[in-house]
Amino acid sequence: MRRRHPPPPARAGRPGKRLRGELATTILESLPGVVCVADDAGRLVRWSRRAEEVWGYTPKELRVLGVLELFPAEERGRVSAVLQEVFRAGSAAMEASVMTKAGERRQFFFTGRRAKCQGKSCVVGIGLDTTDRRRAQDEEIRLRKALTHAASEWRQTFDAMEAGILILDGEGLLVRLNLAAMEWAGRPFEECLGRRLEGLGAGEPWAAAAAMVSEMRGQRAAFRQVRNARGGRSWDLAATTMATDAEDTRLLLLIRDVTSIVNLQEAARQAAHMAAMGTLTAGVAHEVRNPLFAISANVDALEMVLDGRPDVAELVAAVKDQVRRLGGLMVDLLELGRPSTATLVEGRLDRVVDGAIRGCAALAGRAGVRIEARAAGPVPPVLVDPDRLTQVLDNLLKNAIQHSPRGGVVAVELAGFREDERDWVRCTVLDEGPGFRAEDLPRVFDPFFTRRRGGTGLGLSIAQRIVEQHAGRVRAGNREEGGAAVSVDLPRSPAGPGGVEPAGEGTSR
Image 1 (cartoon, rainbow, N blue to C red):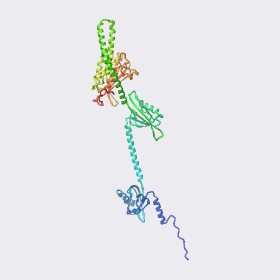
Image 2: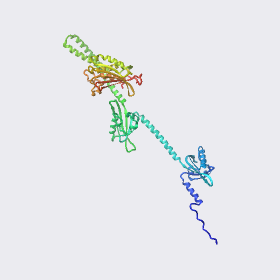
Image 3: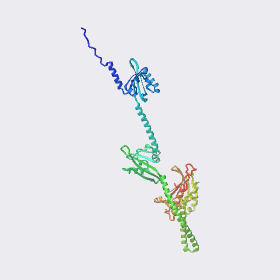
């Protein structure tokens, strides 16, 4: 009887054909992307279920489709070249679009490797769908561009504001400011950041702004107006708290230069005041002039009748002095009430000064005062009414002579300068007298204000009014070495470089 042997055991690590097929299918379906196998003729011989789901084709449709038919027409040449590269070199990669059955274009990143399939060369390709990632990247790029554009527009708008805008943190340190604020501070952006307001500059508006910010504790908003007495500039300051997502608060500070507005308001108030004063004084002067003329005539007649009587001669002389004083006051009152008119022509201010000096030469000689004219280089032309401006300089020179000690010098200085983007010519009358009292300086141009015995207090008021008709300005102050200094600033004629248009009738700066 033949002896029967048991079958040999299966070798370890060598699964059966069926098991190998199931394992390959499991691995194929577990890959995150789509997997497909193409033969050397470009036909699909195998694919994963994920490929059917993403591309939308049925297994029957995929069997008859060529690999190139999955790609848009403009991509097929490049895909064909990559397939040939895989067969030649063994591997390759590419990024390309795939057209789904529904007509949607989706982006894939493919890697391909050469392999053997049933004894023949084939290409195994794995494709990762990058459509959503690319869309997210494109959207991120679009959002970044939009954000950059919005930030640029915001910065341009921020810097285009004429007002200074500053943003401070809860500690009062600067975190943002616009171009106007930087120009006022005279520092670049980097030097301003992290500073406190008082560190941006001395004086106004920074001192007032710093004080207002320190007083903002517990308040939502604050407002104040500040004026720099030395420079004559005015600012509106407004501060408000800002709501932010951060734990610390933000403070928005707005600084607006309102010098021109304040000056205009002041000029309007002064014009209204002067108009009312002019109407009143002109009426009074007209009413008083006729009786005053009659008094003067009767005093003259009385002097002729009583001629030769020394006991009444002194009394008559005193009456005549007071009549002359009242006559001078009537002239000033009529001038103050005179309509604001000035006929401006292009002229030389030094020539007007020479005429005024000649007119005051006799008074200066009696007072023992010398008058000197000084010019710092050529004097540019200005728009003037020579007669009216001569009246101004005549008044300033007489005041300077009357307040100068015997043997003193009254100087008239002429110089051109540039301020507030305008070209000016300045005429300054300097004396060696006691000067103005500090408490009187704000009132020296008020009508009827005077400290000189026998003065009417109208001379400087009339001078200011005439200068303003020339679109100029007049200022009073004291010299460091002693004495008064009164300056008249007139805009340069438009005929010269940087000139300005002549002011209209009654215009004040």
